[in-house]
Amino acid sequence: MTGDRPAAARTTDAPRPAATARIGMLGGTFDPIHTGHLALARVALDQLGLDHILFVPAGQPPHKRGRPITPAEDRLAMVDLAIDDEPRFAVSRIEIDRPGPSYTADTAEALVAGRETDDRPIELTVILSAESFADLPSWHDPARLLRLARIAVAPRPGHPAPTPGWLAQRLPGFADRVVVLEGPHLDISASDIRARVAAGRPIDQLVPPRVAAYIEAHHLYREPPSRKGQS
Image (cartoon, rainbow, N blue to C red; front, side):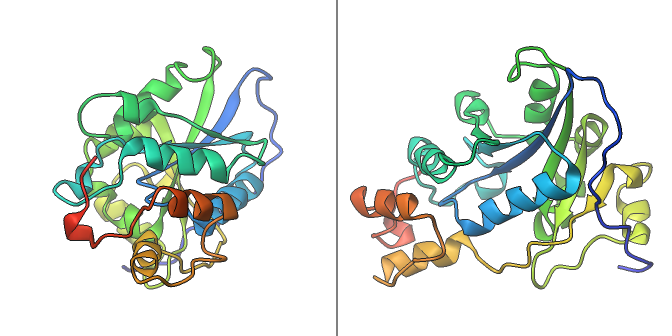
């Protein structure tokens, strides 16, 4: 990557129509949801001036075909438990209920069409880690996604933020649809949490207590990944 980094996201107090909902969409497998996800959602709310964050667990993640994934209803339940005390967080089962691969462009189109917010106009921001954003040009219909929503890129250790030069080369014409968040600077991964549980190691501080209790009660991640069933 070359060139200067784009300006980091700033909270804006610009006026907007009262009925418009400024929604941040945080999608993912959430296998399991962890404190890094929650910290990212809080940062996005603060820096982007969003009204709500919508967590969207993937039904059939297209980038994880053939990999063992915890059943969708368990992943959804863990998200619900994790955000229960956060009034500006909500969870949607839109991708779980939709058949076929969970393409972000399809979800963004459904959200902007008002199917999740009582037909109110939506200004949608899709929140991605720098690691995920680097793969965006290879996603299903990235141009449609960028026409529907802006993208907020969160830092991820070992994965540089996008530069103007990279954006111009890989996503020509859409550089103004990308903002970079100032944090959170956390290095937490769901794969590490699953490995810790399988090895009998503690996951305190990595997931909310209610999520840890759910994992324990439902015996999740106890078997080696190769023996787990797929969703």
